[in-house]
Length: 95
Image 1 (cartoon, rainbow, N blue to C red):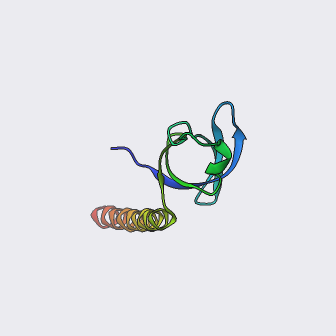
Image 2 (spheres, rainbow, N blue to C red; image 1 turned 90 degrees about the vertical axis):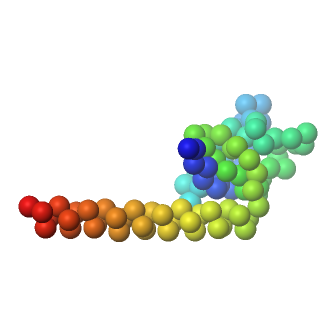
């Protein structure tokens, strides 16, 4: 299964190579936007939300969908922390 993380395109880094800077949860990274670039100038992608996977923007999404997905990812992270705490507690009790 592939996980796409929502990111917002904040600037164009290299139009010829179709690279943009995308902000994902406060972190900015270069991302290839060739998969979501339609017959439009690359600068029009600034402000667009996309699902990002291993350095590529895979599809465009709207801001509401991005917010919902980020919320679920945060919840999963919190749940993972709780699961790890339960496992650590279980190991402590077993020893």
